[in-house]
Length: 187
View (cartoon, rainbow, N blue to C red):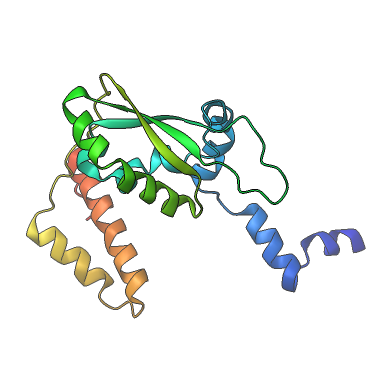
């Protein structure tokens, strides 16, 4: 009987936090990192950050016409006390944008290094060729004014602004889902 009570007894302090953290849902990005890490490592990427955040690093316009291919790290290890050589980043770019990308190369190298937090990349090498078009998401359908007002009225009493916005987004998503299914009971 004592074991049963111990199993169902509430956890206290740090143990409770550790238990909650271990049992809580994990973001999909955390799980995907383990799956794609070997493929990215084979191309010289330490993580998915440069590949997945390329539009933020290069800007939407250039990111639509270019993709980072790999990072070539220097083969020679630096001697003790000697600074390591920066890597070379290889980027595939459409032919029409190659000249613009070449002109913006130093800025792009600086932005990659800023994103990584250290001087990892020293040079940019461009490979001209076709770049796969980015997957365009479907435009989000709009809610009618009455439904949007009803959702806003339902969450108006929530004091915390962040929570209120999150609940409003959830309410709009549920209403849109019901609208696309033809079910009007969710609103």
